[in-house]
Length: 221
Image (cartoon, rainbow, N blue to C red; front, side, top):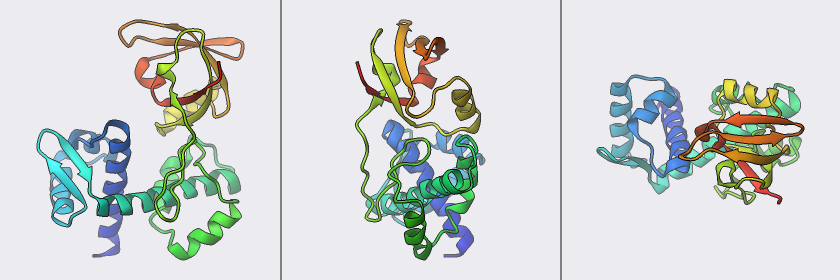
């Protein structure tokens, strides 16, 4: 398998892992949007991954990682999130820009580099967005949290994780104070998955239900 092909395989397995973590399955249409490729390319690549034992695919239901595929995906996620830490902690690049840079770095980081990199970074447990960095053995150690959408009116929480790493969204969160460690209080929840209004410091902010669901909090009251 060539280096280029390996990088492509890794990108797909990582993408499937991320989507599977969110909704239990990765749909081909979601892979098209996430990887920014045409549907035919996704179809062909998924077929190849299935033949090689990395995934299972049920038409009209979606794609799931096999144990073999999950093992590789976790290695890629580990390298990706350590790369993000390198970019923020050492190179001081803002958290809303590191995801795209890390997508390129993750394929060039070898096992020989990982150990000294972790030591230099003082063995971080999460990426800059609060998502857990898998252990060398593929374990996931994660702080207990819940989506912001699960808080009721007048309940409070501390932001511990952002599950969506799109640059424009993270930049927006940064500008309104929705960063890791920030305290929030739900002021109002519109019915039928409508907007959620919260207090962030002295200001009120409204988010759509879909966007609010990407914020994980630890309830404090």
